[in-house]
Length: 354
Image (tube, one colour):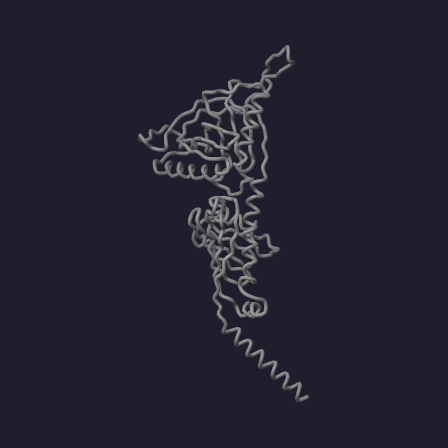
């Protein structure tokens, strides 16, 4: 009986000593996780900076679908809540880094995600600072280090970000529609050169520039932004085009300005709609060209092909939600119907969409 009593006392003393030892261990920690990807840092930044996307890449297991966005959904001071948890963007530096405060399952993590170009790819670095609770320090005493215990969830988050962006890029559809009437339009434009892969980033940067220009000169936007293609090389994927913002009234720009104001006459064109990322623009243009040839339409050479961004990178960061109309100007106002090879006639079967 005495032996058992001594044994219990020794166990209690060891537990006390162990508790004191664990409690006095360093609580602060700093770790980081990294991931390499072919995605551009601009695309990654915009995706992470918009907390409307967080529920797709949230690495912490949850059965709750009750996510609630605060007043702001993206950029500094944006917040999203679920259960008793919080994600708060404390600050963001465009195309460079996003500061993120996380309060998950009673734990607080001060983090910052960096995006750096590295040998033609993008390196994502997620730095995490925190303080270990007594329960966490006890668990780490038996299981390892913050890197082995805490880092896996953050690594899972980075992989989920890349996965969901890639999945969204791959999810697209192209639909041939009909002849359409493009109205007479006044617009300001900026010339841009890009390859297909960087098309979305270039469009976004140029549209932002035009938005700022319009605000500075109190110009009233008048319709969805569009691009006019100057040169399309489907083999190399290189594109030279003008990014345009329709405005209500003509505006005279200063000589030497990178933004100019022009006007285009109304015209008919064949329309193809792309639902998805701009990297598939070459496929949409190819489909439009094929349809013009198959329907025996004649393309106008005095007006450049136009892409209209109905739902774009400006207002949503999920590429599979983007809607772009591609229009090749043609001379016809209706689609010719070919009866046979030796005897053809033209009927007004399809009226253009007004």
